[in-house]
Amino acid sequence: MPAMDYEGFFKERLEALRAMVAGAGGTRNISGNNDLHLLFQREIADLHGREAALIFTSGYVANDAALSTLAREMPGTVVFSDALNHASMIAGIRNSRAEKYIFRHNDPSDLARLLQGVAMGRPKLVCFESVYSMAGDIAPIAALCDVADRFGAMTYIDEVHAFGSMGRMAAGSPSAKGSCTAQR
Image (tube, rainbow, N blue to C red; front, side):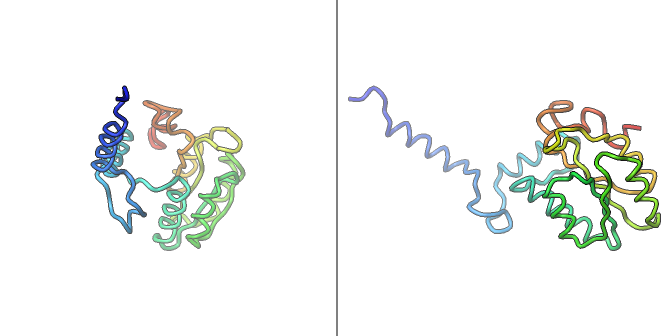
């Protein structure tokens, strides 16, 4: 008789997996939610002190979906994108078909120059990363947020490379420095 009951060992784990399947067998819009998805969203929202969170299948999909929707659903939106933004952000901005301007990498002065050319009443969205994956540098978040605020623009910050490595409980750079509003 073998020392290890492999059949029982694997049968027990298989039953546990069946009870807590994390994979939906398709995207959420096809296969629906799983309790683990909803629990994870709640934990992410709590970590960031927010009312709710929404998880996507990847960071690429999150940026593409969020940016294309935000800029498309607010009529007249003008998007301002850092020159070194990730391809996922560029795709989302492009897919929105919104008017867009590219500002020099991490350059609040260039951002201000571009923003001043757009009427105050138009919706504006400034998009940048907190930590740039290719260059490895960190954005001057407070300065970019100050410029955006001065011109009545919203900000969209991709935190994928800061999350897990920076800030309170590794929740990303805004948790390390406060939100855009709190940085002033």
